[in-house]
Length: 352
Image (cartoon, rainbow, N blue to C red):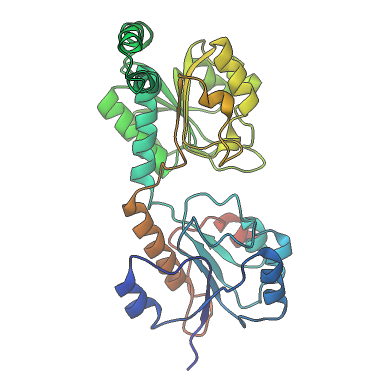
């Protein structure tokens, strides 16, 4: 009996070889994408070079994007046999997941695999913006005794302990729930959150989290906000000049979500005026280009989109994408279930 075909995009698996060989290959015929760019990939889909494949597998979020965004132009060319697109990574702004759902194609991400790493990075960001660690590190690296001494004196006059301050979380998902627990337990912060969907009363009680139905209301009371929402048409430039103006003078921002959620020009202006005292950005508006204005500011902690960048994360991204395909595809390529980490469930269930 012929096994369902899985189109593998990006680099070969690196970590879960035993599971891949014993569990995955026993169920599926895996073919590797050979197209180096979008134009050739489109031609391959049109000519059915890879046949009637049933799933798309992208095990590494840093490879497998050679065909560009998965928009209607690509999606309409997929064979009717496709049931799931299983990808590594937590973000999915590069794929039109609703358009996939309209074709009854599940999209699953690597939710859960990076929760620990990203929440740890956000916690580091909070510590850094309250204690001005980046400014201190930059001074120490000059190896200049005068700069060292001056910065030593300055830091104590401009830094605060996070304890007792309000952390406003935008988007209460699995990552930010871990952050809320860590920030409350380790740092003694008061947790407030805004989300379009309110958490259960039990979850709020467990986290000690206060819900705000209005983002504006939360921005007004937060000493520091941490962003954990996806990037889409509703969240691009969510934190703009108007939102920043609502925040307390001297408040702080941590972003481990997506760069374009925060309007970069408005952020630079708020930092230059002192209205925002410090920021920690792991993601950037024009990534991989970092704002040169932000890079020149000592109150900015800037990292290279490494919040989830731990080996544990990569291993689980690769494994999780395989498990999502196994959960969905039957022996004849039919859909037998739902992914473990679906992204487009609402749109999928609404599709005819």
